[in-house]
Image (cartoon, rainbow, N blue to C red; front, side):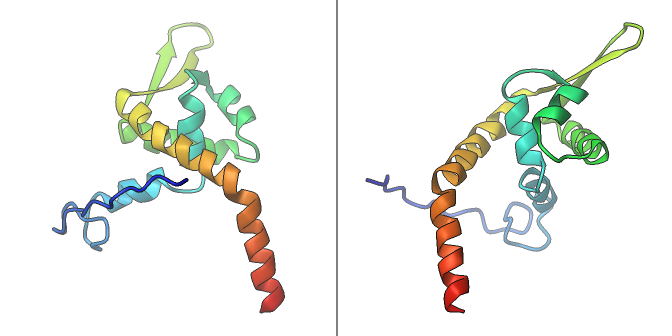
Length: 131
């Protein structure tokens, strides 16, 4: 049986309401829920990784896109970039405490998608067949 969860009202002023077009947090929301960021955040929840390790574990992400996502997530305080003073320098990426707090619900969402993906694809095919 599904869990009955009562929806909580979100704040309704323009500075804290993601539904309001002028909410400054909307850009952060868009970045966290974009195409690649959830995959980067959930993968880094497994532990620190070097750039190439992360790239190799996220299928079809280009180096350019991964570099940009890591830069933005670092700027947002969700990812920490560490450079070890070796030759050549060794750079690794890890989640911050805030990054871990967002990775957990993203992982749950990804699990839900994996569990329900077949049913959604079947519904799409049925819809397309009827259209």
